Length: 250
Length: 198
Length: 65
Image 1 (tube, rainbow over the protein chains, first blue to last red):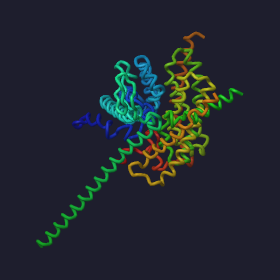
Image 2 (cartoon, rainbow over the protein chains, first blue to last red; image 1 turned 90 degrees about the horizontal axis):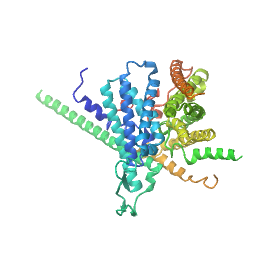
Image 3 (spheres, each protein chain N blue to C red; image 1 turned 180 degrees about the horizontal axis):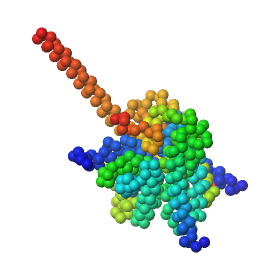
Image 4 (tube, rainbow over the protein chains, first blue to last red; image 1 turned 30 degrees about the vertical axis):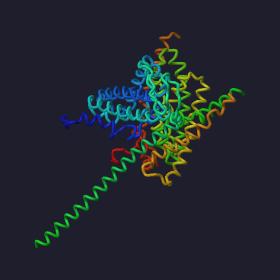
């Protein structure tokens, strides 16, 4: 099958911005609100999500000719649940801190609309490589969306960025932003708004990110209609000028 | 007597203090998606209550009497999603065949419940916290009633919001999320309600 | 009962669950929609924000663009 040049790149990039699962399609909102209290948790959630998405997309794509059309959805649910179980057990074994932070939300990847949605809408119709790229793009897009939410929430909520609490293999570092700390991490002053680390902050941050997206979209649309109108006026004027000229010639 | 009090307190605490949508973040998708009209919110909420209670009643014995003795506790997620999905399909099948009037109100919401995090979240949460059967039941009932309560209240607010003059960029989902944030703030005020009793 | 017995029981129950799920899924799809509910549709405004692609009334987001 011949494909246009740059198809793979486009396929990969679409998940990050144009079809971002969280900010554009507004899917998978539950983990997005629950696990974005800290950047590390967001990275962990995004990572596990991406692994499950890639595995399920590849397997669904491999089996797409074997699964009868009628029992597609049940088959996908079983495939996804299996991978989630595997990922859950691996997390429990190798990153216990991440396991206890995310808690039930690792299991809830099963009912995440994005995974099932990608399996049905993309992997069941496309080849293995395309599905793999699609899953990578979507997973990265979701992870970046989670991180951008967590960035606001962690900085505003705790006043600093902490690394090494969940991914225990990196040394514990705290980067103060709204706080001032001595070298032994005793806080001298603290201008953080702890509301942002509560559920309220999650809703507010998500609302304003969606609002900004809508604002940019509105501006683009307005600009487009404005340009179209200008173009139309210019064409009309040209046509008028041409007809005038034609009239003069006659 | 004390057992009954504990049961009721557990229900109320799961319903209001640790609300499923506003503090545990389960079931945000239907919360935002099916709350534009009070009637549809009520239908969705009732369907969720029904499925969550049934799923809790089935999943607890399944885990404790079958998966644990067999030593395959790790299969819990797979077993739960299978139970929930078949439950939703069976209930849907029953309604479709025998009760057209109920199908008219609940039919379109049933397929959405399988992917509602709240159902799997409750079943999995009961397992992870190793709750007893009665506690699981209280948790399931309280969670689902909390969902029903919040989604109905939220839809009532959103009906009013439709006619409000919101900034263009915040129209629709963003203003709904801000409303949810204010609701969450109100629910935060209930924390510690029972700290003196239990 | 020995542990192996429980294991066999558990696996057979899991398999049974899969079968129940698949059968009920297929039956649900094949059952005709009851009378009076044929054009049961949620208003577009009601559905436009919902993200469930499984929903028969799901409005595709791409169409908006």
